Amino acid sequence: MGYGVGPRDPNLRLDHPWQHGRFSLEIGSQHVWRMRGGSRDRFNVGGYYFQVAPYEYGYTDGWMWDNDDIILYLDPDHDGWYLAYDVRLGTYVHVLYLGP
Image: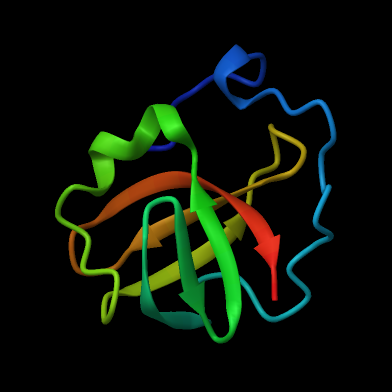
């Protein structure tokens, strides 16, 4: 997937953005995180957990949840969402921060 959904996409509307707080560690292209287990429903990066947006599950079929590197970005169009970029596969998905 590329980053191509519109700012009013109903699939990314959250009733309570930032319900679990905000990811307070470094994000952006200079900060690569190694996934440390889980699945698209709940995966671990550095002791913090995220969930892939359910309607984007199919884009993560090839992700290796225990050792792929990802880069996290704040989604400027959708409050409460981050974008996770899988370095190995070159795919983006929306992810929700679940907390430590």
